[in-house]
Image 1: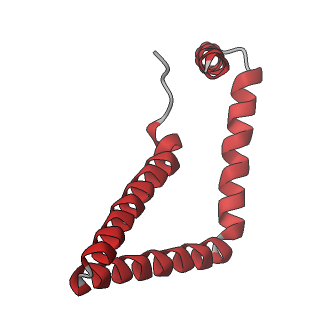
Image 2 (image 1 turned 180 degrees about the vertical axis):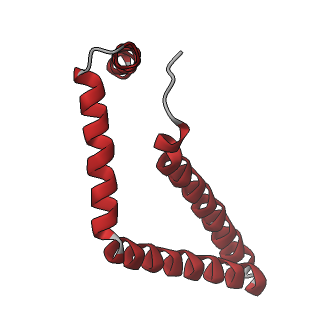
Length: 108
């Protein structure tokens, strides 16, 4: 099996969670509109407002810490490139895992 670090998929997990929350909110909004339920529509509005606030917060944090994020990304990318070009046993294991991952993606 592929031994890929779990922190590489943190963004994927976050996107799945946010998508699920938005789907539930959409369902809540539809049900609230059909039943003309003030409570459901209020919950729908509050949920959308919270998502908007989180997006603005994420954008501001991304802008403030942009240089640190770029530095971290470049370091990780450089380490992976060095591992793909290296000849140690650990590098060869990484290269094999990367090739398996490439083949798996190509088959999709």
